[in-house]
Length: 382
Image (cartoon, rainbow, N blue to C red):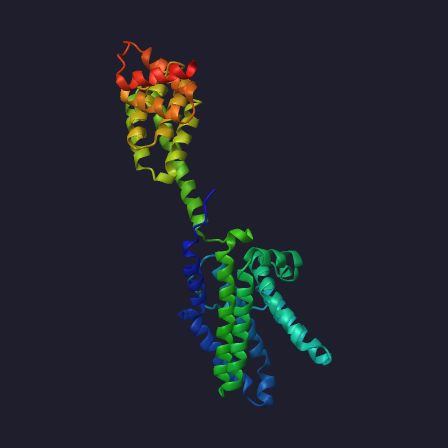
């Protein structure tokens, strides 16, 4: 399982918020705001004639905002250029949901002037990020209205959710302020578009940052990159292990030990244990009862030199499973392994390694350290 690295959360979020200010987005806003400003600020006849054009541009804007939130939520920090296909009303059904809800709320408030407007608008502001996030994560328009999916977003974002709500409200209030103060319709429309894209990009960035809590798998993330690298490495490792077996079949255990040692020395610390486990797991199925233990015996000094006594003891375990008489080749290695087994509460393994080493042919003459370990183990058996 790949652990998420949260050190880049803030930079990732800031890069998402910067997406509306990239050249592609700025060019889109400049073009559409000029067109909308011209159409909207004209007289009634021009406005009626321009309804189709206004509708087309608004659809284009909504689709572009959806593309922006999708890219930000999926780990991309490069803003795509607006394409002609994005102006197609039927391209994404999600483009209809929130504009339709906004119109519905406006019509209801207009038809029922006695309704308190502030609570209705407050509830809409509180639920909008959850609705938008739900449809962005799943890609389905219906989930923008699904209570379960919206609850999933609120629960997954946690403390981030009120921050997102306040951010979206700030964008909306800033848009209202610009609309009241600015004299240029083009400037008003451009500001509204930029704030809309900023809100969508911010929501997408938060979805990306909280992807694990949300159970959301972006197209591009450190976890996916690590998974692809691990899958590629798994194939290379399997080929390497197959080559080791070929060496053992032709009784080249020394060469196999050298090659395996180079592989383990070159492995990253986070890969070392997994690589050795894969090697030992494959070795359990190899029909080389003599050469395989010899290779393992040749790897023990390397792992001890790498300050990996636990992994070296795993080798000894695998060697004993392959042959009951397995023992380290030299006394210094035997001392380190026996002492480590004793210190980690594996007295039986320590005694087995000691007996196997002392029972070798020719019988070795134990040094002072090995004799001390022998006495200590004998004392514990009493």
